[in-house]
Length: 188
Image (cartoon, rainbow, N blue to C red):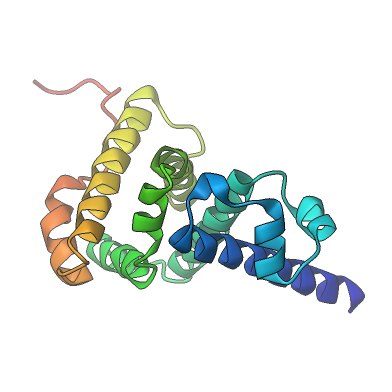
């Protein structure tokens, strides 16, 4: 039982620290936020911070990986989910975390997040498809879709999320064609 409690406590500390950083980022310039600021806001010691993270960027990356993991677990629990349902669920997630993209944009951290987003999309695709090695064309396709989706999410956040996730899914789905294996010869 001690191990589960330690894991639970570690998860709580990570949550406190990531929440503290995100709240501070909404109120302050990212570059001016110090470890002391984060630790104080999170209610933890600087030592705890350094035992858990190596940088502010590390906090954000681990936070996004945690969100992506939770999202993936939800999707895995619904093996019959359609692409439309997946898109609505995905867009609902971003709308529920509505301040996230504007906060990251203000801090000039969208590139960091885009790379993390691509990494997580690769993981989603390989886990869901069972194909653990992407071909070059699949990799380009994934990056192309991730870039378009990322910029659509930014535009949506800048509009104040005025469209519903359902409306966004309807607009974006025509651009989200499933990957085909273009390495195979075509009949053309």
